[in-house]
Length: 154
Image 1: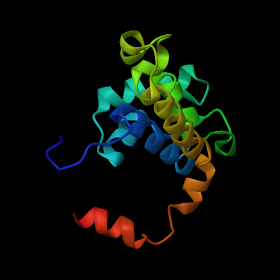
Image 2: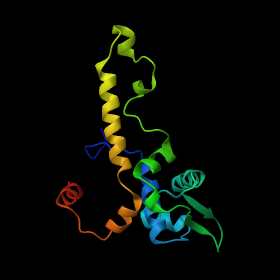
Image 3: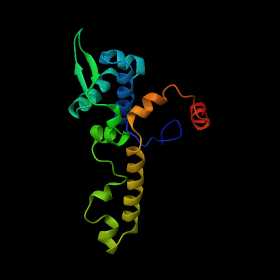
Image 4: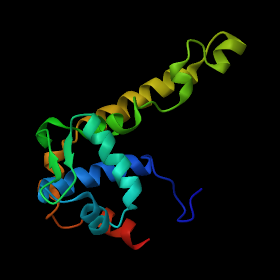
């Protein structure tokens, strides 16, 4: 378990990708170094994330004085799921979902756990797919909810 007492569902690069896209929406043309500094992210790691976002067609990143990072897609067309999968590949809850026969199926011939993983995965994917990035840019100025305030203070 992480030092803060919980673990995140998203990998660091997935989270960084979402934060970077929201930042670029508000600051088109910002250089990658400024994005890293303003978001307090490791510069080299963010560069790797921006390359993945560029490969996915989400951003254009041009170095130099007249360059910077620009959105290459309308954020209304992007969901959290799109970003997560662009950075890390298809989202699954457990690797047994990717197997023809999971370890329990091999041992017993059946597996209720695999069906549960598929159900949970469908729900998680649906939740991530239901959040469009343009909604998050608009929500930046919204006050913190009680739950967010509680989590921030823990």
